[in-house]
Length: 135
Image 1: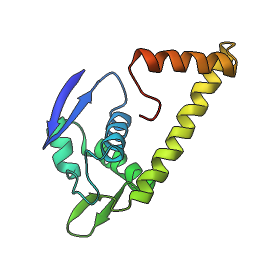
Image 2 (image 1 turned 90 degrees about the vertical axis):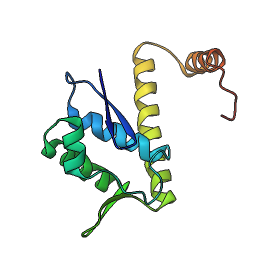
Image 3 (image 1 turned 30 degrees about the vertical axis):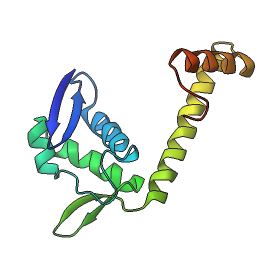
Image 4 (image 1 turned 180 degrees about the horizontal axis):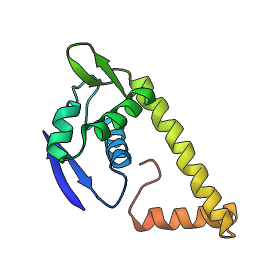
């Protein structure tokens, strides 16, 4: 794992995994968590590629996905910015939360766990990690 800085943003790059997916996942997370604020300018494709030492086409592919997700918007002559819509971020987070939960449940069911057992494991794990009920 290689840590790289692009402006004030930190990226973890694993060159054994697809780079476009890593950039996409990390940028989604930075926007969804608010590390990149609403309407904030994000690094240009050229800047991101230069700082991460990767092909600009790889960055462009990730940026196109972010735009399709509704998480970024291009402004002609100004660059690419995080969405200004909290609703788009909320919708994105809900969509992915449901996908992750569905994958998790399918994996647990394939291992033979029922919903009560899954709930028990999640409760125990949450308590071990110190999460409160409304965190």
